[in-house]
Image 1: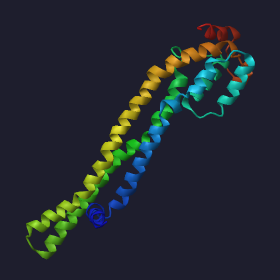
Image 2: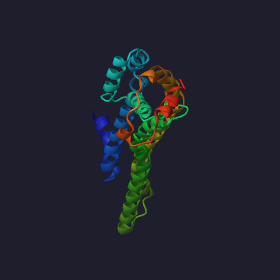
Image 3: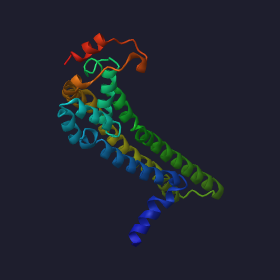
Image 4: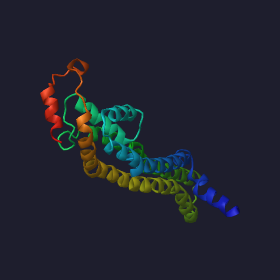
Length: 233
């Protein structure tokens, strides 16, 4: 217990006022990393049950029920399938190779969800350097007032000032590492897994997608154009 108190005093309390920002930031960053890792699991991004249900649609009634249920689902795959269905109802292509916009829109939101992590790995080192700068300035000011030239005291004071720099790097390095991992994971979803999966799903759903009246979406798309978009399958 005494040892833990010594560590707390040495690596937290002696860091100065900047630790009031660095400590909450470290907890926040850890929480964001854990949350985003859970959210980007393949079982959550592409639920197996949803895939099987989409591939198993065999009637108009089943499709209508499935389409209605998609609006209540939060997974990126559900949002993408719904976006492609709506695109087909507007007469646009539902083939991922021809019309990648629905995938890009959903993936952009996943990329944006990492912005708080990128902010953390940028801000943390800056706060650390700020704390170190404040500490060193205070140390030199005290030495100027006292007028002593005690090198051991100077080294000890500078050592304490570097605590915040250490904390800034402790936060920034894992934040940047996991940011890169998650960004690469989203990229694989965007470029490989989603296009391949959605080709099969939309091929199965294409016969059940009905063109909405032109007045419902205000675009001059004809039935012929709609049939051409579905004929890709």
